[in-house]
Image (spheres, rainbow, N blue to C red):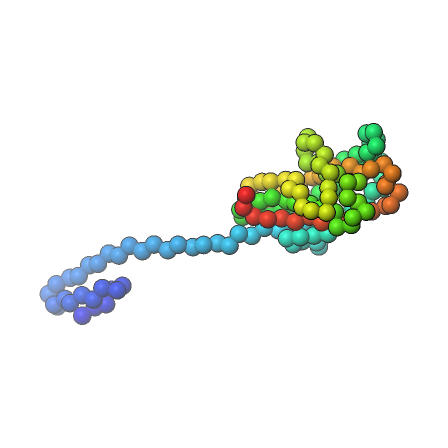
Length: 150
């Protein structure tokens, strides 16, 4: 008697027995999403980033545009959303971010989704717009978060 897979077969010494079995396995991978800040050790699903307001900017009415001021790298094996908020109520309504050629989106204390994408590793560049009256504060804290799936 020979045991093949989960089938038990009886064979005499004069017979050859051949059994073919097909198997299928299902593997479920967890969704993995994180953001990192280039040239730093900062990485995770939620990061507080102090954004420096110094340097040259382009005045646009009551706002100053600081082009390319924030760069993050997204690492994800699923579709993702990057969301941003200001943790300090003194900055609510005084800072906006823009990705690509879109419109600047004014930030508040609650999350705003500013970028979405597909699985992979992606650099996301944000232009920062700051209320001209607040430029002398030097730094604005921004909280960046990522979530998987759309």
